[in-house]
Length: 251
Image (cartoon, rainbow, N blue to C red; front, side, top):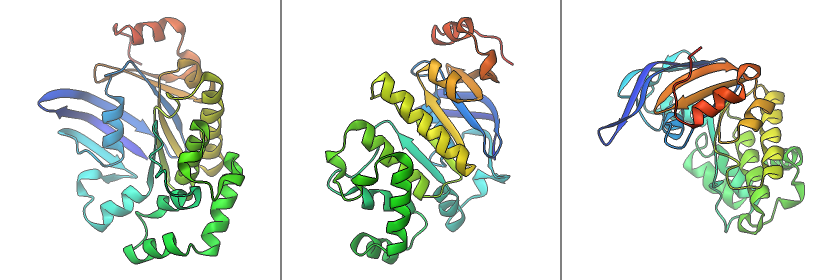
């Protein structure tokens, strides 16, 4: 599904990603680990088609990202959902309308306005089912700014599911919640993506969550991939070297 080949990105003249080679198959769950400044967020900007590479290539479902323009690019982006640390919910809107926003990229302007004013019954029912899956069915008509942090992140996951995205990118989704809640949310994210056959790439700062919930872990440091291994092969020594910024043997 995802194919990156010798990908380079520079921001403000400073190299941020260097010679990135990465392949992720449809339905895989992959965790990205690395210290702050490793380039994980920039990599996500490339993956969601928000930032073109300066060199190398990015193929999404076999299509060169550079060839995606106009309606084709919009359609491709509609199939990619990003779950951020800060949720990106509109506080004054209820949970229903925040989740309906997941389909804005696929709807016309007129249909989007209509849905915000008079949501279709079928879509409301679909949102209710998704909220049941993520454990907050009673919050359908609650304002987003009245939810707890964990509930807001569940609503953000629900929006990605309603978007029906084939690729879900989770950029530090649990950095702002306590450890117990972080485990619940990462488990929920992995379970729902696995049930639906969605591809999940998640950037995390918690190695224990990556090893518990993800079959594959990619380590990044200083804009490079330093290892790409099954989770069972990522031991404490390798993790200590990664977060200390020391070289690690590539695999």
